[in-house]
Length: 358
Image (cartoon, rainbow, N blue to C red; front, side, top):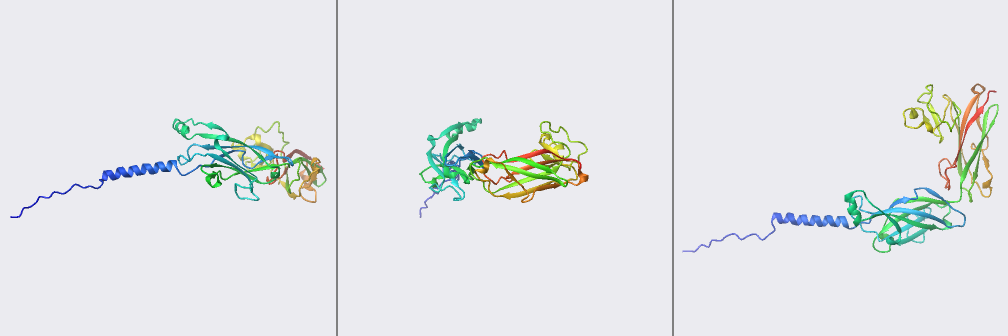
């Protein structure tokens, strides 16, 4: 008689489903922490100067400028970045380079330890972020640069890079895009508008001057003339638009823009922006011309130019259109192509030009 042995199944020695879940959870947390705390250095945020700023420079002299940027805190993806141990400040000529080279091709390049740069801590009003700020503080940095005299009238671009690791530029994250900046010793000024009344209309001549120290590049001028309904009074602007004026009629603003009356009646533009109202049924006349450079040393003498070329600019008026009231705007560099240290004196306007009855 054979003896049967009662065999029982052995216990499993593998990982249970619950164990797999716990292991995956741990791996997920580890991966999340790795994603949060490693692998990136966020770019600085440029604060000032603003883009396309021009600074007054002088021939043969270095020019100082103060730049500011912000950096720190967590990233926009809620990640905790690598801390910046140093920053690079770079100015380069866009005619020579497309970006900062970190070498002699730059107009100005410097690398500084983060703790050596003047900075102001920026705190968050949020309680949650104030805790994070203690670990990853957010700062505004201020740095003084001195740009060489050779950078005068060059198209400059500046940027700042946050760096962690070695001294190479490859270890830095640059603010992109950078900001344009120019140092110039030139400035064209719209001086005045002259008008000469004739039997056939009114002839215009404008004057400008270069109040800077260097010759300007070729420049453009624009003169625009309108017939208007009333004599502009900038000290007592219009308080209402007459009912006889249609919504589609044209308002000339204090900046020389043409805007429909409806924009003022519906409140999109304030009445204080009104310079004059164009006479319905009349057309604007404008002249646009390009001229060569305004040289030094003639810059101190206002230079008469005729913005319609070799002939005087004539606004024709038939006898049956008289008497008439006109306004004119003269703009130097109307498209802001020329680099100047003062852009506030490029417009001259003449608000009362009378054409009497013949």
